[in-house]
Image (cartoon, rainbow, N blue to C red; front, side, top):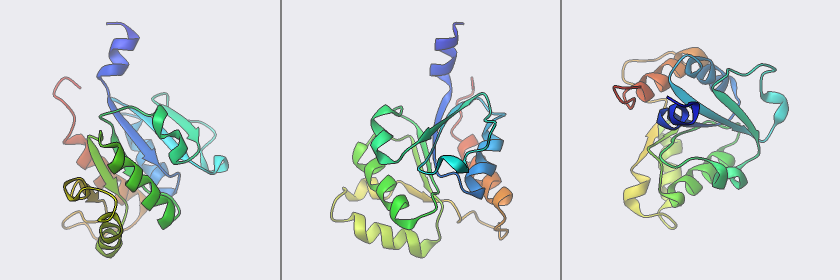
Length: 160
């Protein structure tokens, strides 16, 4: 199989935010059959060495046109406003395989109220609250990352 064929069959993950949780998620994704596009507006927050399956992109929603369709989007920036911008643009783009937002239920409810005026309701319902894993009370970055990646693992195709 050619390398191009291999990379096109991998799960595409767009990770928005290089916070502590973002770093922990990226470390876990390094050993999985996926291609990670990791975005943050702050270049200094990316680690010096990235996993081979990861591409760091400095920027924000302006970079969206260069990112793959049918991707799994994980939004966990350092700012609620940046999170909102990403979520709004992802929903308007309307080609995400999965949309996860690192948030509590009240933040998700606030976003939903704001999105009602600009995005069809059916799309809004696609947002998954990443802190809402049943039975997991630990809020350490590694624990959150494990629950996030466990949810993504459910989306892997058997051949992946």
